[in-house]
Length: 121
Image (cartoon, rainbow, N blue to C red):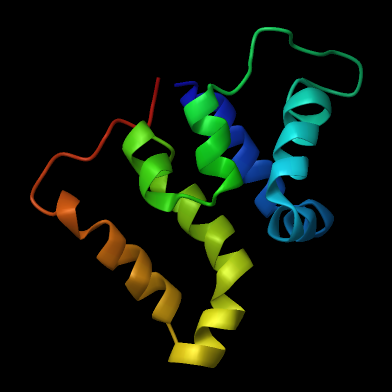
């Protein structure tokens, strides 16, 4: 897994309201667009040709699969913040404050007492 590239995706999409909206509405299209056009950008004039998502990473991002991303080593804070931005308002309306965060913890409860997957490369 390219933890760097997945984490770059989570970081950049979470900090851009337009990308975040597109990721919520049509994740597959946004992941494909980001991987081809946004992710390779190193700065305003330079691009990388060495990064790309694996099929498993791409599907986890498309499906908003928090557990799979965590288990592949995506940074848990980056995952939590982007998915709070996507889901928290809806979850709070249905289940009350911090309900998404509680569900996030519940989904990862099988990791309690175990070493977390490494988040650095």
